Length: 326
Image (cartoon, rainbow, N blue to C red; front, side):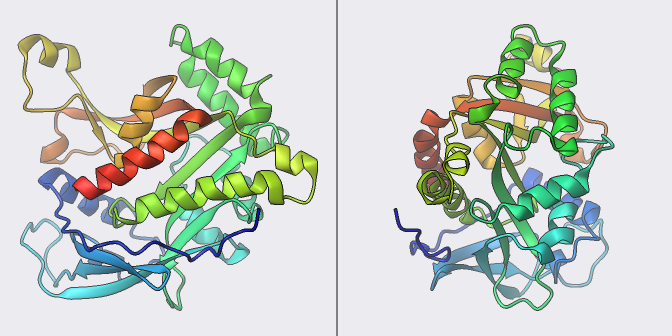
């Protein structure tokens, strides 16, 4: 099966996008926590306005933030144009990817450098998002899928497996299923890694995941050896993400209080993955403890999900519908 050009991208109609107060709060806090990220004008990426793809990349109109105190909630004025493009990972992306993944395993000390090297070394399956023609080549997102059996002897993967098993040990029924996927079934299990700045234009998401899953499909035929082709024959994906969970979910249900939702998904696609997952579990995070007014009743949680590969076509369809409804 011939590989398609990476930058081929379907033209979309411009969609009006506005952030809720909660999402604006996330954007502000994300910008503050990632102030060392080598992204040009990252402080401008706060409150999106309409976007559309053009000539293989996504053109995004972003409202410009004037000089103001960090605590101010006043609206932004002006527009900054940013053209986002998809690229194969390369060694020069090391620091950008490492920054995006710096809290991937919460506060766990592990071989993050080795993990980033695995991602950058797998160029046939994986995508990074940058601004078109940006000299600084700042990274806005990375997405990939790593075969857990292929990389089983890597120190970073061994630590990651131990981390998952430790967090799942209190989950009845889930721990045994997790052990199977991390052990004897790992030949066909992909670790789906998707990290990005919190306010990346949502219209990019369907194209970003289309690129990933199309490349996985192509790799099953295009890789030079049978072993490599088989390593992308995924039957399950394991996904680690982060959510905000209401501190008093049981009490809220008992009182019938619907003013706050039980779970707030930082990444919209996680709600779809969660719904389609075979099983999942949550655990409290030690890092990124937020104290904003919008999150006063929520705690930051890690979310681990197992999604069957057969559910991916449904995920892709529902993601497009979700973004179109935004």
